[in-house]
Length: 100
Image (cartoon, rainbow, N blue to C red; front, top):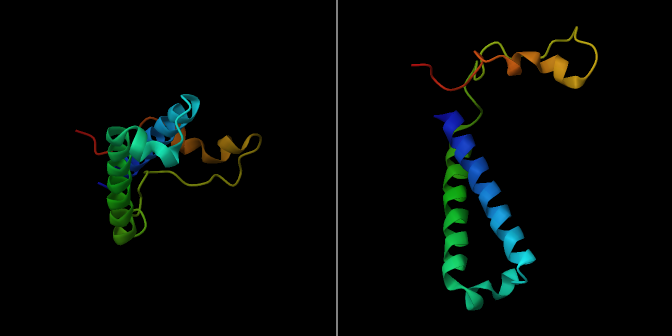
């Protein structure tokens, strides 16, 4: 589903950034990675390919379906912090994942 695709893409992007940050802290230059560790290099390229496939799928499918998160619309009468405007997003029954 659309929601799972977004979640997979987010997780892949986070994993990629964490691995790259770790390599930087470890003193391994990303440009030298194919020589230093071909296994890590290939793993990073694989996650990039997966992310690209998911991104292409999301672009092909277009915008999220109508009523993607039920009851989630901005409340124009809300005051205070911006999160109050989108309070419906915090309610547990508002989810894009199908309920069993």
